[in-house]
Amino acid sequence: MMFSPSSRLMVACRIVVASPLLAFAALASSTQGQILSPPITYNGPRNLAIHVSPAEALVNLDNEKARTLQYASPVTGAYYPKDSLRTVTEARAAQWMTTLQASPVNGLQIDPYGVISVSAHQEAVAQQQIAARLATPGLSFADKAFTLQMAVFAFASSDYPARLPIAEDYVRQLDALGPTAAYWQFNGRRPLIYAYYRLGRSADVARIGLATFALVNVMSYDLRREMYAPGTWMDYAAVVDAVSGQSDGRKTIRAMNKALMDATVAPASLVAVDSSFAWNSEWWRQFMQEEINLAERVGEAAPPMVSNYWVNRGPSRDSQSVPVNDGKIRIIEIGSFTCAPCVAAVPGLERLHHQYPAIEVVFLTAGLGQWGNRIVPGKVEAAHLADHFVNNLHATFPIGIAMPVWVPDDNGGEMAVPPTPTWHAGNYPQAGKPTFYVLDGKGIVRRVIGGYTRDLEENLSAIVEYL
Image (cartoon, rainbow, N blue to C red; front, side):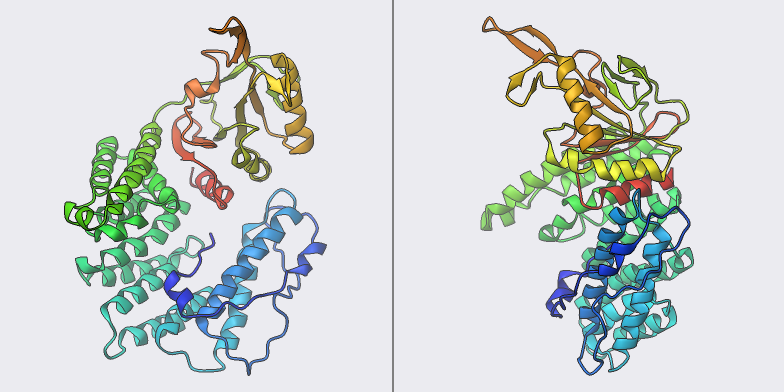
């Protein structure tokens, strides 16, 4: 997973613009387990006389990793080998270390330097640098907390579980700073949630996650925006998933949700000064309620998938009721062909379909009773949709299309409505467009994700690996 440096680091640096990765254009298709190690030009040869700070280097390293992912995904066909991306990133981090060692690293620059050092497998160097930074005379409270937060981020990796105890030690140092450091304690724990979830360590996800969200009420009100933002959905959903498997898990989740909902309420003293705090409260409550609605589905048995027109599911396109408790893990997207984010998710689902042959990826959608500017019968529209998904979007995974039926309306005409009760949304409610359900082999809902994000494919992959 790619992380970007914090805004604090961005202030401390100027971004160095890099050239494209032309070397990836010649890559051939790859299969799982192979390591891609092409000659990567990145920014070309560097003149060591030109000073580059660690903050600049970390920004560049993240940009280079993002471009590597961007080029590798389409070129390698179905997906990019995870080990390959990690190998390239670590090699590049080692090169950055060589560049940075040309001059001393001091002050705030030690924080990104530590992250790069760990990426380059120089953990001892990173720990020495972090210790030196924390021992700086007159170091402010905020700088100390930020350094410890960055230290957790550097060592919290699912790829290297042996580093996790070091990350946990930095969390303990953060906690020793007391409640005033709640903001940094909250953000410091989040990469640990992700790492433990990737490793399938539910007890640790629950332990760290519940402690993370308990800090929201401790933070000052304006800093709680970190919780009520789209970027937290992966962390929150992972904790809900982990806790739902515990005894009294549903009770624990509801208590956590109540505390998080209570924390959205703006203090009257702040609203009296600035009415925008009341607007923030309403916005955060809406976000939290949506997350709670999704969380309530987790742990429940999912109903069969029913549709009256199927694509890529055997020779027949007729109505089928597909059971979901047959031992297969499933990723189900509920969306629409008229929804740009829904369609944008299709290539990623196709890659997951090939990456994990044992699971089933499904797209469930509904017709509108028209195609272009023409009103058409349901089967005609469904045939057009099937052609669009197969020939334009190149989808090879199953697609269920709920063909509408025509019924009289109040004005003496007819209107198209989805067939009930067989339409998928009656059984798989949407929480924004698109909505993704992840079911385990017993047909139990393990995750519900509302909306599309840039890292959706990687997050879905993490969930599949967890299951």
